[in-house]
Length: 200
Image 1 (spheres, rainbow, N blue to C red):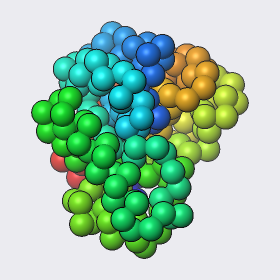
Image 2: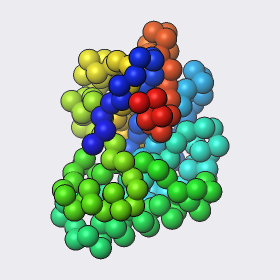
Image 3: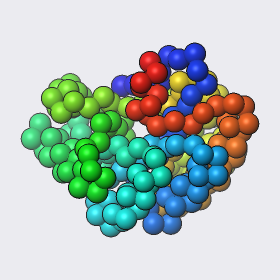
């Protein structure tokens, strides 16, 4: 599980899980457009099928689309075949929309076992985690809480996790708006996960 990359450069990868969402994902895209930053979206196949144009839009704006399974299951509870199917189904959806398959993967709930790792190795995916799990933005703990826990994890090469899908993500959007402004004013460049991995 890759939570950060060791780099002397002021690079940070901000990631979003569980989209695309027709209401919140465009707001996130606007935030990053304002600072010319790039984000990574770990998308769920079921959501992709509901908002295919949003996937294309995010990709065309230079953001990265990562694989986050088709139905968001706990992979450690699936057999090998079902695990493979969850990942492959979304891989094909993304490839159809953006022209190539995703190259990074994040397991739902950051849940995995040896079998999951074996499947991902077979499929050629690095498993991407994050440093700011304590922010728990998915629980809607408040903008200040999300920011406080995330700021603690800010450094060169950090990978940060937020959510733009499932439920009310207005706190997340507001926290990210503030964070992106802070990071760019501090001289950080917001890059995709794959760009960050290339600097390791």
